[in-house]
Length: 363
Ligand code: NAD
Ligand code: IPM
Ligand code: MN
Image (cartoon, rainbow, N blue to C red):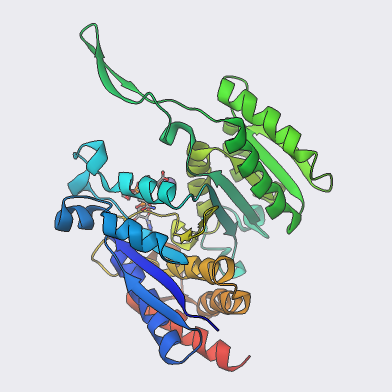
Protein backbone atom coordinates (compact mmCIF):
# COMPACT_ATOMS: atom_id res chain seq x y z
CA UNK A 1 0.00 0.00 0.00
CA UNK A 2 0.97 3.66 -0.10
CA UNK A 3 2.26 5.71 2.80
CA UNK A 4 -0.48 7.84 4.34
CA UNK A 5 0.57 11.28 5.52
CA UNK A 6 -1.19 12.59 8.61
CA UNK A 7 -0.60 15.69 10.69
CA UNK A 8 -1.18 15.99 14.44
CA UNK A 9 -2.10 19.33 16.01
CA UNK A 10 -2.07 18.97 19.82
CA UNK A 11 -2.83 22.65 20.54
CA UNK A 12 -3.47 23.91 24.07
CA UNK A 13 -4.68 22.94 27.54
CA UNK A 14 -5.65 19.26 27.69
CA UNK A 15 -4.97 19.06 23.93
CA UNK A 16 -1.40 17.77 24.29
CA UNK A 17 -2.50 15.47 27.15
CA UNK A 18 -5.20 13.69 25.12
CA UNK A 19 -3.03 13.68 21.99
CA UNK A 20 -0.03 12.01 23.71
CA UNK A 21 -1.52 8.49 24.03
CA UNK A 22 -3.00 8.71 20.53
CA UNK A 23 0.35 9.74 19.13
CA UNK A 24 1.94 6.81 20.99
CA UNK A 25 -0.65 4.46 19.50
CA UNK A 26 0.13 5.73 16.00
CA UNK A 27 3.87 5.18 16.54
CA UNK A 28 3.22 1.65 17.66
CA UNK A 29 0.93 1.03 14.67
CA UNK A 30 3.79 2.12 12.43
CA UNK A 31 6.43 0.02 14.16
CA UNK A 32 4.14 -3.03 14.12
CA UNK A 33 3.33 -2.34 10.46
CA UNK A 34 -0.40 -2.23 11.23
CA UNK A 35 -0.61 0.57 8.68
CA UNK A 36 1.84 2.53 6.54
CA UNK A 37 1.85 6.02 8.02
CA UNK A 38 3.99 9.10 8.04
CA UNK A 39 3.00 11.09 11.14
CA UNK A 40 4.21 14.58 12.00
CA UNK A 41 3.21 17.36 14.36
CA UNK A 42 2.66 21.09 13.97
CA UNK A 43 1.70 24.12 16.05
CA UNK A 44 -1.76 25.61 16.39
CA UNK A 45 -3.61 27.87 18.81
CA UNK A 46 -2.20 29.67 21.83
CA UNK A 47 0.94 27.55 21.88
CA UNK A 48 1.59 28.53 18.25
CA UNK A 49 0.97 32.18 19.11
CA UNK A 50 3.48 31.96 21.97
CA UNK A 51 6.14 30.43 19.72
CA UNK A 52 5.55 32.27 16.44
CA UNK A 53 3.32 35.28 17.13
CA UNK A 54 0.50 33.72 15.11
CA UNK A 55 -2.10 31.12 16.19
CA UNK A 56 -2.19 29.55 12.71
CA UNK A 57 1.34 29.65 11.24
CA UNK A 58 1.59 29.42 7.45
CA UNK A 59 3.77 26.34 7.87
CA UNK A 60 0.93 24.56 9.71
CA UNK A 61 -1.55 25.38 6.94
CA UNK A 62 0.88 24.23 4.23
CA UNK A 63 1.58 20.95 5.98
CA UNK A 64 -2.12 20.37 6.69
CA UNK A 65 -2.95 20.87 3.01
CA UNK A 66 -0.16 18.46 2.11
CA UNK A 67 -1.60 15.74 4.41
CA UNK A 68 -4.36 13.20 3.81
CA UNK A 69 -5.82 13.94 7.21
CA UNK A 70 -5.33 16.21 10.19
CA UNK A 71 -5.99 15.20 13.79
CA UNK A 72 -6.56 18.21 16.03
CA UNK A 73 -6.95 18.09 19.82
CA UNK A 74 -8.07 21.49 21.16
CA UNK A 75 -7.13 25.15 21.31
CA UNK A 76 -7.74 28.12 23.58
CA UNK A 77 -7.30 29.19 27.15
CA UNK A 78 -7.83 32.10 29.54
CA UNK A 79 -4.33 33.37 28.83
CA UNK A 80 -5.41 34.21 25.28
CA UNK A 81 -8.94 35.47 25.90
CA UNK A 82 -8.04 39.15 25.73
CA UNK A 83 -6.09 38.95 22.48
CA UNK A 84 -7.56 40.68 19.42
CA UNK A 85 -9.75 38.32 17.37
CA UNK A 86 -7.16 37.72 14.64
CA UNK A 87 -4.65 36.43 17.19
CA UNK A 88 -6.99 34.28 19.22
CA UNK A 89 -6.52 30.49 19.24
CA UNK A 90 -10.17 30.04 18.21
CA UNK A 91 -9.50 32.07 15.07
CA UNK A 92 -6.90 29.45 14.11
CA UNK A 93 -9.49 26.73 14.41
CA UNK A 94 -11.89 28.55 12.11
CA UNK A 95 -8.96 29.32 9.82
CA UNK A 96 -7.86 25.74 9.39
CA UNK A 97 -11.43 24.52 8.84
CA UNK A 98 -11.84 27.14 6.14
CA UNK A 99 -8.44 26.45 4.50
CA UNK A 100 -9.21 22.73 4.36
CA UNK A 101 -12.69 23.35 2.94
CA UNK A 102 -14.08 21.27 5.80
CA UNK A 103 -17.67 22.48 5.49
CA UNK A 104 -19.39 19.40 6.92
CA UNK A 105 -18.82 18.55 10.55
CA UNK A 106 -20.15 15.12 11.51
CA UNK A 107 -20.63 14.73 15.25
CA UNK A 108 -21.99 11.28 16.12
CA UNK A 109 -23.46 10.86 19.61
CA UNK A 110 -23.76 7.19 20.41
CA UNK A 111 -24.21 5.73 23.85
CA UNK A 112 -21.78 3.04 24.87
CA UNK A 113 -24.17 0.82 26.86
CA UNK A 114 -21.51 0.59 29.60
CA UNK A 115 -22.06 4.31 30.26
CA UNK A 116 -25.85 4.19 30.65
CA UNK A 117 -25.46 4.95 34.35
CA UNK A 118 -22.62 7.44 33.93
CA UNK A 119 -24.84 10.01 32.23
CA UNK A 120 -26.70 12.59 34.27
CA UNK A 121 -29.85 11.55 32.39
CA UNK A 122 -32.07 8.61 33.26
CA UNK A 123 -30.89 5.37 31.60
CA UNK A 124 -34.33 4.81 30.06
CA UNK A 125 -34.15 8.22 28.33
CA UNK A 126 -30.75 7.64 26.72
CA UNK A 127 -30.92 3.89 26.08
CA UNK A 128 -30.05 3.13 22.47
CA UNK A 129 -29.06 6.74 21.80
CA UNK A 130 -27.52 6.93 18.33
CA UNK A 131 -27.72 10.21 16.46
CA UNK A 132 -25.40 12.35 14.41
CA UNK A 133 -25.29 16.11 14.21
CA UNK A 134 -24.32 17.31 10.74
CA UNK A 135 -23.13 20.81 11.44
CA UNK A 136 -22.35 23.33 8.69
CA UNK A 137 -18.84 24.44 9.62
CA UNK A 138 -17.48 27.13 7.33
CA UNK A 139 -20.39 29.57 7.08
CA UNK A 140 -23.15 31.20 9.08
CA UNK A 141 -22.62 33.75 11.83
CA UNK A 142 -19.07 32.49 12.46
CA UNK A 143 -17.91 33.84 9.11
CA UNK A 144 -20.54 36.35 7.96
CA UNK A 145 -19.74 39.99 7.44
CA UNK A 146 -20.16 42.70 8.50
CA UNK A 147 -18.65 41.83 11.83
CA UNK A 148 -16.73 43.72 14.46
CA UNK A 149 -17.11 46.22 17.25
CA UNK A 150 -17.89 49.70 15.96
CA UNK A 151 -18.87 53.00 17.49
CA UNK A 152 -22.14 54.51 16.31
CA UNK A 153 -23.10 57.91 17.67
CA UNK A 154 -20.80 57.47 20.63
CA UNK A 155 -22.22 54.01 21.45
CA UNK A 156 -20.18 50.85 20.96
CA UNK A 157 -21.95 48.11 19.04
CA UNK A 158 -20.89 44.49 18.55
CA UNK A 159 -21.93 43.10 15.15
CA UNK A 160 -22.11 39.65 13.60
CA UNK A 161 -24.03 38.47 10.59
CA UNK A 162 -25.82 35.17 10.08
CA UNK A 163 -25.83 34.36 6.38
CA UNK A 164 -26.24 31.27 4.24
CA UNK A 165 -26.18 31.04 0.47
CA UNK A 166 -28.15 28.46 -1.50
CA UNK A 167 -25.04 26.49 -2.56
CA UNK A 168 -23.83 26.34 1.05
CA UNK A 169 -27.17 24.98 2.23
CA UNK A 170 -27.47 22.57 -0.68
CA UNK A 171 -24.10 20.91 -0.11
CA UNK A 172 -24.56 20.45 3.64
CA UNK A 173 -28.09 19.12 3.13
CA UNK A 174 -26.75 16.59 0.62
CA UNK A 175 -24.17 15.39 3.13
CA UNK A 176 -26.89 14.97 5.75
CA UNK A 177 -29.24 13.02 3.46
CA UNK A 178 -26.39 10.75 2.38
CA UNK A 179 -25.46 10.09 6.01
CA UNK A 180 -29.11 9.33 6.79
CA UNK A 181 -29.21 6.83 3.91
CA UNK A 182 -26.58 4.73 5.66
CA UNK A 183 -28.52 4.95 8.95
CA UNK A 184 -32.18 5.16 10.04
CA UNK A 185 -33.15 7.31 7.04
CA UNK A 186 -34.46 10.29 8.94
CA UNK A 187 -33.24 13.89 8.78
CA UNK A 188 -34.29 16.58 11.22
CA UNK A 189 -33.42 20.00 9.87
CA UNK A 190 -33.01 22.45 12.73
CA UNK A 191 -33.48 26.17 12.12
CA UNK A 192 -35.13 29.33 13.37
CA UNK A 193 -37.31 29.91 10.32
CA UNK A 194 -39.98 31.60 12.43
CA UNK A 195 -37.63 34.56 12.93
CA UNK A 196 -34.58 34.47 10.64
CA UNK A 197 -34.53 34.90 6.85
CA UNK A 198 -31.34 32.83 6.65
CA UNK A 199 -33.41 30.00 8.15
CA UNK A 200 -36.33 30.59 5.77
CA UNK A 201 -33.95 30.02 2.88
CA UNK A 202 -32.32 27.11 4.72
CA UNK A 203 -35.67 25.34 5.05
CA UNK A 204 -36.64 25.99 1.44
CA UNK A 205 -33.36 24.58 0.10
CA UNK A 206 -33.41 21.55 2.41
CA UNK A 207 -36.92 20.72 1.18
CA UNK A 208 -35.69 20.95 -2.41
CA UNK A 209 -32.66 18.71 -1.79
CA UNK A 210 -34.91 16.21 0.02
CA UNK A 211 -36.64 15.45 -3.31
CA UNK A 212 -33.40 13.76 -4.43
CA UNK A 213 -33.72 11.42 -1.44
CA UNK A 214 -37.29 10.08 -1.48
CA UNK A 215 -36.23 7.16 0.74
CA UNK A 216 -35.28 9.55 3.56
CA UNK A 217 -37.86 11.17 5.86
CA UNK A 218 -37.42 14.89 6.46
CA UNK A 219 -38.78 16.84 9.41
CA UNK A 220 -38.18 20.44 10.47
CA UNK A 221 -37.74 21.69 13.99
CA UNK A 222 -37.09 25.08 15.52
CA UNK A 223 -33.81 25.15 17.40
CA UNK A 224 -35.35 25.95 20.78
CA UNK A 225 -37.68 22.97 20.51
CA UNK A 226 -34.78 20.78 19.29
CA UNK A 227 -32.76 21.68 22.38
CA UNK A 228 -35.70 20.54 24.51
CA UNK A 229 -36.47 17.37 22.51
CA UNK A 230 -32.82 16.32 22.75
CA UNK A 231 -33.14 15.81 26.49
CA UNK A 232 -36.82 14.77 26.44
CA UNK A 233 -36.63 12.05 23.81
CA UNK A 234 -33.19 11.82 22.13
CA UNK A 235 -34.13 8.46 20.61
CA UNK A 236 -36.44 10.36 18.24
CA UNK A 237 -33.44 11.71 16.31
CA UNK A 238 -31.34 10.11 13.62
CA UNK A 239 -29.53 12.82 11.63
CA UNK A 240 -29.76 16.45 12.70
CA UNK A 241 -28.67 18.93 10.03
CA UNK A 242 -28.16 22.51 11.08
CA UNK A 243 -26.07 25.64 10.75
CA UNK A 244 -22.77 26.44 12.36
CA UNK A 245 -23.79 27.99 15.67
CA UNK A 246 -26.89 25.85 16.33
CA UNK A 247 -24.78 22.75 15.59
CA UNK A 248 -22.09 23.91 17.99
CA UNK A 249 -24.58 24.25 20.82
CA UNK A 250 -26.71 21.17 20.13
CA UNK A 251 -23.68 18.89 19.81
CA UNK A 252 -22.39 19.82 23.26
CA UNK A 253 -25.88 19.08 24.55
CA UNK A 254 -25.92 15.75 22.71
CA UNK A 255 -22.52 14.85 24.14
CA UNK A 256 -23.85 14.90 27.68
CA UNK A 257 -26.43 12.28 26.66
CA UNK A 258 -23.50 9.91 26.06
CA UNK A 259 -22.13 10.51 29.54
CA UNK A 260 -19.47 13.14 28.90
CA UNK A 261 -18.18 15.62 26.39
CA UNK A 262 -14.95 13.64 26.69
CA UNK A 263 -16.58 10.87 24.62
CA UNK A 264 -17.58 12.78 21.46
CA UNK A 265 -15.48 12.73 18.30
CA UNK A 266 -16.00 14.55 15.04
CA UNK A 267 -15.02 14.51 11.39
CA UNK A 268 -14.88 17.72 9.37
CA UNK A 269 -15.05 16.82 5.74
CA UNK A 270 -15.71 18.33 2.34
CA UNK A 271 -12.20 19.16 1.17
CA UNK A 272 -9.32 16.98 0.03
CA UNK A 273 -7.88 16.74 3.54
CA UNK A 274 -10.17 15.59 6.34
CA UNK A 275 -9.97 17.23 9.76
CA UNK A 276 -10.74 15.17 12.86
CA UNK A 277 -11.29 16.63 16.30
CA UNK A 278 -12.99 15.88 19.59
CA UNK A 279 -15.88 18.28 20.12
CA UNK A 280 -14.54 19.38 23.49
CA UNK A 281 -12.22 22.29 24.10
CA UNK A 282 -8.93 22.76 25.93
CA UNK A 283 -10.63 22.38 29.35
CA UNK A 284 -8.40 24.83 31.22
CA UNK A 285 -10.11 23.85 34.48
CA UNK A 286 -8.56 20.37 34.34
CA UNK A 287 -5.47 20.96 32.17
CA UNK A 288 -2.15 19.64 33.43
CA UNK A 289 -3.78 17.34 35.98
CA UNK A 290 -3.81 14.09 34.01
CA UNK A 291 -7.56 13.65 34.51
CA UNK A 292 -8.97 14.42 31.05
CA UNK A 293 -10.77 11.69 29.15
CA UNK A 294 -8.80 10.82 25.99
CA UNK A 295 -11.65 8.69 24.52
CA UNK A 296 -12.95 11.43 22.19
CA UNK A 297 -9.42 11.83 20.82
CA UNK A 298 -9.12 8.08 20.14
CA UNK A 299 -12.60 8.02 18.60
CA UNK A 300 -11.59 10.95 16.38
CA UNK A 301 -8.66 8.85 15.17
CA UNK A 302 -11.15 6.05 14.47
CA UNK A 303 -13.17 8.45 12.30
CA UNK A 304 -9.95 9.47 10.53
CA UNK A 305 -9.04 5.84 9.82
CA UNK A 306 -12.52 5.25 8.47
CA UNK A 307 -13.25 8.41 6.44
CA UNK A 308 -9.80 9.52 5.23
CA UNK A 309 -7.63 6.39 5.15
CA UNK A 310 -10.22 3.84 4.05
CA UNK A 311 -9.50 1.56 7.02
CA UNK A 312 -12.94 0.77 8.46
CA UNK A 313 -11.74 -2.45 10.12
CA UNK A 314 -9.06 -0.59 12.07
CA UNK A 315 -11.61 2.09 12.95
CA UNK A 316 -14.10 -0.46 14.31
CA UNK A 317 -11.32 -2.18 16.26
CA UNK A 318 -10.33 1.11 17.88
CA UNK A 319 -13.96 1.80 18.83
CA UNK A 320 -14.17 -1.70 20.29
CA UNK A 321 -10.96 -1.03 22.22
CA UNK A 322 -12.57 2.01 23.87
CA UNK A 323 -15.65 -0.05 24.60
CA UNK A 324 -13.70 -2.95 26.10
CA UNK A 325 -11.88 -0.62 28.50
CA UNK A 326 -15.26 0.79 29.56
CA UNK A 327 -16.55 -2.78 29.89
CA UNK A 328 -13.73 -3.49 32.37
CA UNK A 329 -15.12 -0.68 34.50
CA UNK A 330 -12.12 1.55 33.89
CA UNK A 331 -13.09 5.22 33.99
CA UNK A 332 -11.71 8.72 33.90
CA UNK A 333 -13.25 11.12 36.38
CA UNK A 334 -15.87 12.58 34.02
CA UNK A 335 -17.50 9.16 33.50
CA UNK A 336 -16.74 7.64 36.90
CA UNK A 337 -19.37 5.69 38.80
CA UNK A 338 -19.38 3.82 42.11
CA UNK A 339 -17.18 0.71 42.05
CA UNK A 340 -15.25 1.71 38.91
CA UNK A 341 -11.48 1.70 38.50
CA UNK A 342 -10.61 5.38 38.38
CA UNK A 343 -7.63 6.18 36.16
CA UNK A 344 -5.93 9.25 34.71
CA UNK A 345 -5.68 10.36 31.11
CA UNK A 346 -2.39 8.63 30.48
CA UNK A 347 -3.46 5.28 31.92
CA UNK A 348 -6.83 5.39 30.16
CA UNK A 349 -4.94 5.99 26.91
CA UNK A 350 -2.48 3.17 27.54
CA UNK A 351 -5.31 0.78 28.31
CA UNK A 352 -7.17 1.71 25.12
CA UNK A 353 -3.98 1.15 23.08
CA UNK A 354 -3.30 -2.22 24.69
CA UNK A 355 -6.90 -3.28 24.08
CA UNK A 356 -6.57 -2.18 20.45
CA UNK A 357 -3.56 -4.41 19.74
CA UNK A 358 -5.07 -7.27 21.73
CA UNK A 359 -8.26 -7.08 19.65
CA UNK A 360 -6.25 -6.74 16.44
CA UNK A 361 -4.30 -9.91 17.19
CA UNK A 362 -7.50 -11.83 17.90
CA UNK A 363 -9.04 -10.87 14.54
P1 NAD B 1 -14.42 22.77 27.15
O1 NAD B 1 -14.99 21.79 26.23
O2 NAD B 1 -12.96 22.98 27.08
O3 NAD B 1 -14.79 22.34 28.65
C1 NAD B 1 -16.13 22.28 29.12
C2 NAD B 1 -16.20 21.38 30.36
O4 NAD B 1 -16.03 20.02 29.93
C3 NAD B 1 -15.10 21.66 31.36
O5 NAD B 1 -15.61 21.48 32.65
C4 NAD B 1 -14.06 20.61 31.05
O6 NAD B 1 -13.26 20.24 32.16
C5 NAD B 1 -14.91 19.44 30.57
N1 NAD B 1 -14.19 18.64 29.58
C6 NAD B 1 -13.90 18.99 28.30
N2 NAD B 1 -13.20 18.03 27.69
C7 NAD B 1 -13.03 17.05 28.60
C8 NAD B 1 -12.37 15.78 28.56
N3 NAD B 1 -11.74 15.32 27.45
N4 NAD B 1 -12.39 15.02 29.68
C9 NAD B 1 -13.02 15.45 30.78
N5 NAD B 1 -13.65 16.64 30.87
C10 NAD B 1 -13.66 17.43 29.79
O7 NAD B 1 -15.20 24.13 26.92
P2 NAD B 1 -14.96 25.60 27.59
O8 NAD B 1 -14.53 25.45 29.00
O9 NAD B 1 -16.15 26.36 27.27
O10 NAD B 1 -13.76 26.21 26.75
C11 NAD B 1 -12.39 26.17 27.16
C12 NAD B 1 -11.50 26.67 26.05
O11 NAD B 1 -11.52 25.76 24.95
C13 NAD B 1 -11.91 28.02 25.45
O12 NAD B 1 -10.76 28.74 25.16
C14 NAD B 1 -12.67 27.65 24.20
O13 NAD B 1 -12.66 28.66 23.24
C15 NAD B 1 -11.88 26.45 23.74
N6 NAD B 1 -12.62 25.49 22.92
C16 NAD B 1 -11.89 24.90 21.93
C17 NAD B 1 -12.48 23.92 21.16
C18 NAD B 1 -11.65 23.24 20.13
O14 NAD B 1 -10.44 23.40 20.09
N7 NAD B 1 -12.23 22.44 19.25
C19 NAD B 1 -13.78 23.51 21.43
C20 NAD B 1 -14.49 24.14 22.46
C21 NAD B 1 -13.89 25.11 23.21
C1 IPM C 1 -16.05 23.58 18.67
C2 IPM C 1 -15.65 24.85 19.37
C3 IPM C 1 -15.31 25.92 18.35
C4 IPM C 1 -16.56 26.22 17.54
C5 IPM C 1 -14.74 27.24 18.91
C6 IPM C 1 -13.63 27.01 19.89
C7 IPM C 1 -14.28 28.13 17.80
O1 IPM C 1 -16.62 25.25 20.26
O2 IPM C 1 -15.25 23.04 17.91
O3 IPM C 1 -17.16 23.11 18.90
O4 IPM C 1 -17.45 26.96 18.01
O5 IPM C 1 -16.67 25.70 16.43
MN1 MN D 1 -18.21 23.81 20.56
